Image (cartoon, rainbow, N blue to C red):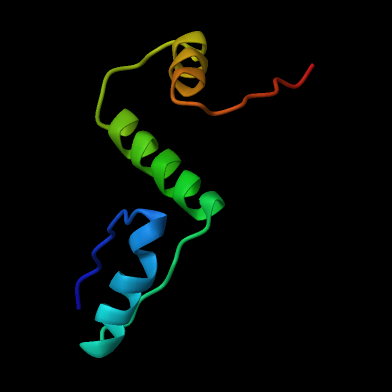
Length: 73
């Protein structure tokens, strides 16, 4: 079995969910938190394959991608 993730505009959501149900495909809508976790996991995987970078570069990249970071003091 394969997993396919599709970004659907909100106005078309009902149409696509109906279509998937018609063809008896299992579907699930991801929460914003789940999507963020998937993105972070992808960045971690990409980072594991690249060279070492400083902590500041990591924070800068995450902020650029919209992740809010609170540093522990």
